[in-house]
Image (cartoon, rainbow, N blue to C red; front, side, top):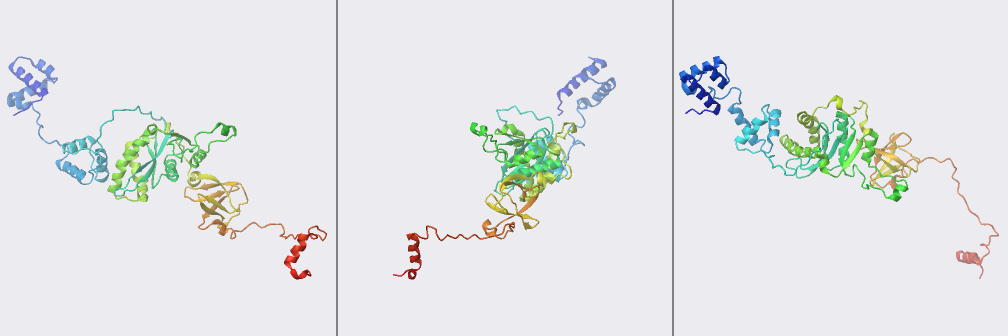
Length: 439
């Protein structure tokens, strides 16, 4: 039995009429869209072979340009054994990365769906749609910061926080850092990765965390009349030193780029941690910086156009430890120690207890390496934590010598002082020494 397509059926009808003499060769050429030579060739083949000459000779035969059945079976077996919870696109990337198999996404989709496998990421579209905010035109013009709470390690029920940043214009993930809690230090490390790889950005887009914005958003009229200003956070003050602006929003849709990024990371990063048996924060951060982020940006992000770039590259001698430090003003007690968050620190100068002769608050910097340093008269002093109460070590600290002589003052009462002749004095003397007064 020979089955013909609509086009082949049309060719068969033309050949029948041509052989029967109902139409001329020129009419057949026009109807089939073929040259005279090709039309005559088809006519001779039809006279010799009949209707079977209309069907293409490669029909039903495996093509030389297709993939072998062995390769198809290998891909289906790999997905069922090692990548059963991976989405199809991520699975295709893993075939290229770990197994050196290069096929198209459409081939993977058609192969797996034909085998009765559905993608775990398949979901219904929401009926509600929101108009996305247009991307910025320049790289570094706006970088979105956020953190995602998730069970990042397979078999570990604890939640960890992945801090990250994405450029709004290009979609480049500029940095990522994993920690047990959402902390200022995590955002500092993300900012350090951003500056190291791309440069100093222009503006930061965040949510209303106390890390970025003060809890007090407005001043009263009386406070404004007194000249008071809203206090900035330590992280915001650090950004001002670098010349970086900050914007904050309470609407998650306003920073939808990074919110969508967390959905992708929670799928891809979790599966890759599980495949590579990564179960610690240290290993995860190393894999993020060295392998995952470069690979992700190469596949999904746009390249930075040099004519549309607002990232400012820093010099090789840029001091990340100092420029990304958090500063606060603290009072120095007894000229030798500090109190920070109910912890006490003694001030040192060249491994010796220092003497800070001031009653005013001095700037205290928490460097990126988490060391605490005091800035006094354009000089940095190191600190060391104390295990016991500070008053127990005050006597051990070298105090500043005094130039004034230490003279004890004695007070004497004159002989004709009224108090000496009073009855109270006589009774007091009698009380002290009863034998001194005759009875």
